[in-house]
Amino acid sequence: MWNIPNLLTMLRIVLIPVFVVVFYIEAHWAPYVAAAIFGAAAFTDWLDGYLARLWEQTSPLGAFLDPVADKLMVAVALVLLVQYDPRTLLALPAIVIIGREITVSALREWMAEIGARAKVAVSMTGKIKTTAQMISIVLLILHDTVFGPWVYGLGVVLLYVAAVLTLWSMMLYLRAAWPSLSGQVDVEGRD
Image (cartoon, rainbow, N blue to C red):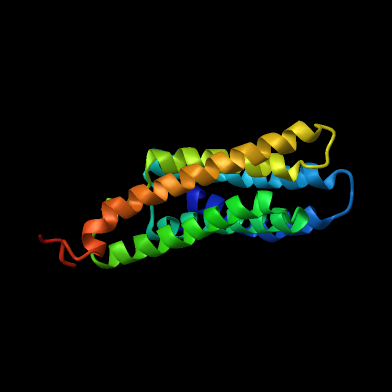
């Protein structure tokens, strides 16, 4: 249970309140530090999964905590960014991304209950979406920095790319689960 991949996942959860505090500090260095904290958390998302597979240290705790940590970090960051810049421009993709995470999490839980969890496993589209999402959030955090307004514009574009991929991957998950959801396959997985 206390292996390095699980500790990295727990670190990501611990970094959430630190990220929030730093995000609200009114100092010229705060956006850089907040972006670094979020970037480090995003990196540990990749690293903990990689190490768990490499070292064969997968665990039920890690399988549970990893997606929780990811969703919490992204949801918190998106809420803070929308609060900082409360325009439809950011609110729409944030709602799509957070709504999708709730929907897909519920779908995975339900599919696991009926023994069909593998039908809604993480896809490559989901991984690309996560990458675009993480990069966009880092760029959006750097809103008022020396890098200039193009960083924020690129962050917005990548957030919309992530939102489109979010909807696409959700449709793939729903399509894979549709036979079970529609009653075409009973809960035992038989036709």
